[in-house]
Image (cartoon, rainbow, N blue to C red; front, side, top):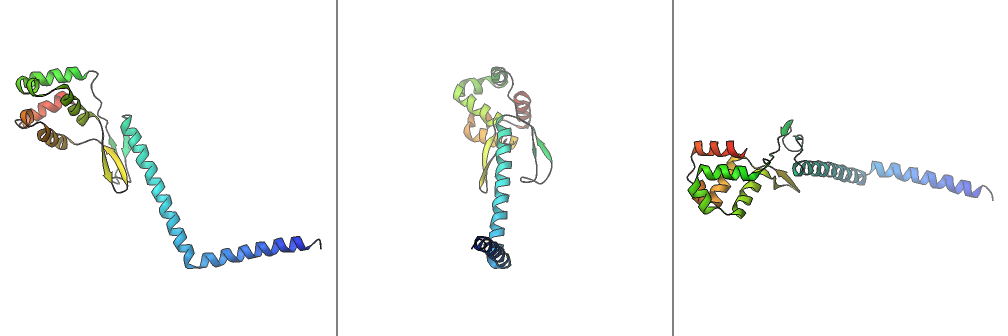
Length: 165
């Protein structure tokens, strides 16, 4: 009677081992393994995206690597100058009639946020923050504010970027 518990326990262990062997040799195991690997890859990518977005939010230079381009490249943060008033004044002196007459404070806030803040972009399942390129900003400024920016030529844009960046 005292050995029945031990025999039952050994039989249970043998049954579990036999079941594990049968499970590993069956098609269900491959399905389970593939789903587990996909889930682990998804969680890794999610962590990389979150780390990247936090670095973009706090202007920490971040290496742009494997999940975006595959190359090692450093994303330089665009830090606004100490006073945006200085930049605004220089731009108003650049084209006084257009900037002073047509742009209000909300417009200036939009322009500076477009230049200095990272924009979210949907890539697959994730939203990744990135800085807009100069060409994208120029297109958006021309579209939003036709009056001063549609008259810009290459030398005007170069001067604009020298002032802003």
